[in-house]
Image (cartoon, rainbow, N blue to C red):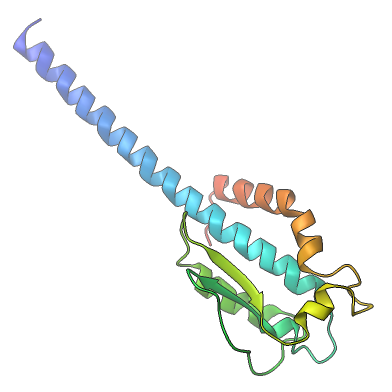
Length: 149
């Protein structure tokens, strides 16, 4: 094999390495999208399933990345739009390997989860977790389709 042929193969190998590196970077980005979309999908389902009277409970769902949110949210959110918008801005920084917390710190949240409300007799979190597979599949489908978060 000549020096020229060897040099050409080395360059192709370098190109292959760049292609692999590019693939890994893209895959990591897609995985991050799946994390964000899945977390937002879980929260959206929980918020939608939450019983509404004044909107205070629905508005107190909070998201944390790397740490559990503390305290309560002031005000109310009957339709859940503000809650989801706030969560999306927090989740924009979430990546693969991060721990994402979804919490409602109101003192009566546990009672509502375990059937205290006729609007949500089976709870919100438990019914959402029963649909987790579909939420994850949708997040993967969206990430494959190139929809960003």
